[in-house]
Each structure stands twice: as C-alpha cells, then as structure tokens.
Length: 578
Image 1: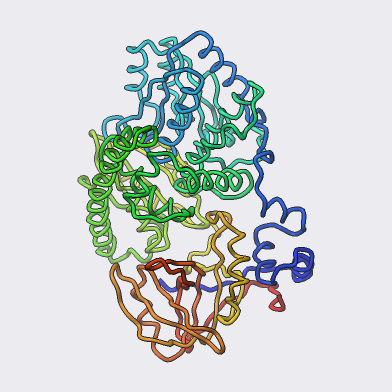
Image 2 (image 1 turned 135 degrees about the horizontal axis):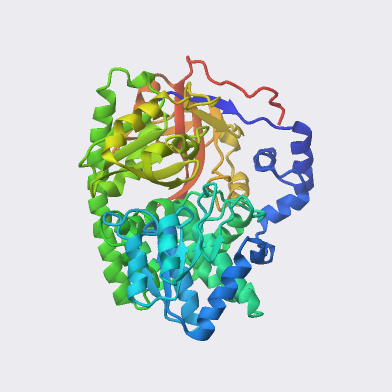
C-alpha cells in the first residue's frame, strides 16, 4: 500500500541548543528532540541508564500487601503456585519469579493454562488444580485482572490470589488478595507501560529491598525482563529502557544456558539486539503455547544443564516450524476471503471467521492482515464450541475501546489499545460482526493511507562512521524509541535490482560523493515497480549488518517512490533549517 511521507515537527531553537550543549550532530539532536529530550540533564538520563533510577516498587498499588503475603508464605512454608499466561510475557514472568523464590529456598509449583482446553487467563481448571494440590497462595502473572469468576472460586476454596498484570482493568477489580497493575485507575505509579514480567520483577525488587539487599544482586534476572519487553512490544522508554538495557547486557555477556541453547538454534550472533529477540527468540518461545505446551518454554528458561536446554530448544524449533506452516496457510485463506468481498475496500475493519483456522496463530494472522490493509483486524475460529478471536490494530485506533462496545456479545475479553483477545457464543457471531462493521472505527484517525514519520532528510554522503557511532547510542531501540527513519531524494540506482527470496528486493544506491550502499526492501518485492529510472526517492533506516564475518552498513528501505511522483506531506510548522 502506498504510504504518506510526513516529517516530524521540531523547534529549531531547542534542537540547536541541544546540539551545542551535547556536542552532537544536528541529526542526533533532532532525533533526541523527537524523543522528548530537550536539555543536557534529560540526555544524561537517556544515554546512561542506571539501576538506581528505577522507581520504588512500593509506589505500585497493593505492592506492600503482595510482599507481606509472599513473605508470610515463605515463613510458614506454604504451598505456592505460579500461574502464568502461555505467551512470552507469561512464561518469562513465571520463570523469573520461580528462579528468585528458589534462591530463597522455596520450590513453587508452576501452572500454564492450555490454550485450547482452557483459553486465555486464570481458568477454573487452574483453580481446581490448586485446590486438589492444597495450594495456599497463587501468584498470577500476565492475566487475572478480569478473572472475576476464577478469583471468586479461589476465594471460596480458601486460596489467596496475588495478581501481577499490566492489562487494562475493567471498571472493577476481582476480589484478589492483591492486584498489582500499574494501569489500575487508583495506581499512581509514575510509569504505566511495564510488561507483566516487568511487574513481576518489581515484586522481586520489593522483596529484595525488604531484605536490605541491593538491586545489583538480582540484575541477573533482567534477561527475562528484556525478552518480555521485546516480545510484548511495550514502550522502551523510562523504566523499560533501563530494564531492557541491563537485560540485554546479561544476555550478551553471560546468557543463561536455556537462552544460550535457543540462540544457538536460531542462528543469531552476539551481541543481540531487541530486534534479534523479537524475530529470533520470541517466535520459538511463543510457539510452545501456540501449538503444544507452554511449559516447554518455562522448562527451557529454567534449565540448568546444556543437555536439558538443547532438548527443549529443539522441541521449540519443531513447534515453530509447524507454527509457520499454519500461519502461512491461514493468512493465505484470510487474504482470499477478504478480497473476495467486493466491498472490502469500503469496510472500516477486517472481521473474518473460519471454523477450522488454527487458534494458535490467530494473533499473527490478525497482525499481518492489519499491516497489509492498514485496518484493524479481527480474526476468529471455533474452539471447544466457542468462537475465539484475536484483534490487532494500527496507529490511531484503540482496538480495546472498540471491542468494549461489543461486550454484550462476549463471554470473555481482555487486552490493550493495540491487541485484544475474546470469546463469544456462536449465536452472537453475526450481531458481533455487524456491530463492529457499523462502528465509527477511525474517530479522527487518518485512514487515507499509512504514514511514515520521518526524523529528517539525510543525504547518503552524511552517513559517516561518526554518525553511525552516534546512532548506536540510541539503543536499545523499539516502540517509543524506534530506529530512526530518514528520507533522501533523487538517489541513484547504482547497480542491478534483484528480486530475492521471501518477496524481497535488493539493490545498490549512491548519491553525489557518497559511497555505494547496499539497500534492501524486506518482503517488499513490490518496490521493483517503483524503480522505473536511474533515480528514486527513498525512505530508509540504517542497519549495521554482517556477512561472512565482515560488517557493513545497509539501508533498510521502508518506501520507494519514483522521482516523478508527489513526495511528501510535511508537518505544518516544520523547520527545515535543522
């Protein structure tokens, strides 16, 4: 789909001051400005993450109650059950807390619900398991905020529940012993965007703090948090930037044996970045819960011996290969179904149902459909006589708020602005779909075409070793702190244009006195149609790649426009002097 090029607005005076105060290039000063950094003090905090800048965990509502209850369980030798969701955030949360409690001499039980038999969240089957095994306290991670019935069943059975979650609550909270969730309306915690594993780490930090110990002695657990931050796509700002920074250090300097085995199986090379984790580690960990038993992922993360770790890494690789088969097949069917509707271009949201689609890949298919058509996507299938669905959105549309209006049709529901999951009775499907299709989905969001928000125009000759060194200081990159997007006009096509595997295009580009750069449009074979002459306009990111042990700079093409086409829609008030 054709994209709009827009340039982020700047205050030229602030950027100039920042450039001089920090002694950096105008390009980096502009990028920092777009990240909310306007002075040397805030730049210092950004460039030099420190563990002592983490927020006090007791600022989280109910944290003191949760800590007291865990301490009591440890003192009295109570039976503990760690209950986590089956995705990466859930399994890393369970693994982190299990690892810490083992240090304290406890041996908690672990329960991960079956995606197909129990579905998302705290299940009645899980509560029944706890009751049969005489569990005294369940710590629920990455779910539970909306589990009113299951929490009620636990209370009736005399079992206490602590919920560690980050999903948006409903108007009320379940009657758990403690609900630690920064998104609680009555929680004044200064940073709301923690992953569930981040919230779990805050519990560990609080327990550690009560023992009078420094945070340095638990920094080895931050690898779990970094993996969760990457794979749950939370903002890498504020506290998450600190947690991701030190978590990546742990992975790259002394990865635990389970992660080391998975890294070896995935073919990644050190040092790993957030992007490496998203595309190289996350799919393997998620595949266990999508197709088999998510406890395999926990077993891998908790493995202490190489033989055990490699066994589970091999299992996860097999699960991931099967997952790829299902998501490709289901995506192909979804595209065919959507485009067979003669009115699909006019519909505000993609709503598709096929009974035999694979439940484990609904979210992947929804995400890809949303990106492909620049519309929110709701993808559904049958499971245990219920319809289950995953919804994904794009910038400007709150999918959680949209589904909130359909609650009358749903039997369960949870999520956040970008993603949600739900179940409904088959009899409600038609009314549910019609409600969504008739909703004012966009509510002011720009639906004309997706926009590329460009940091600055950057001539190819200005891509110097000095600039590359500066840009590396922005890491870790991700949501809230993305790899900068640049534009350059009238770039010369300096070599043959090749169509390669996985619908990708590769070429060589140059301009003026610049060296020739390799450029690639990954999964964008359609770019070939825009390369209709010796010059093109490109929108790109700068990547440092490696091949046969040699590092080189590569431009990742995000859009290509023929020089004859209209180019940009500059943001009003932009100052091009910077």
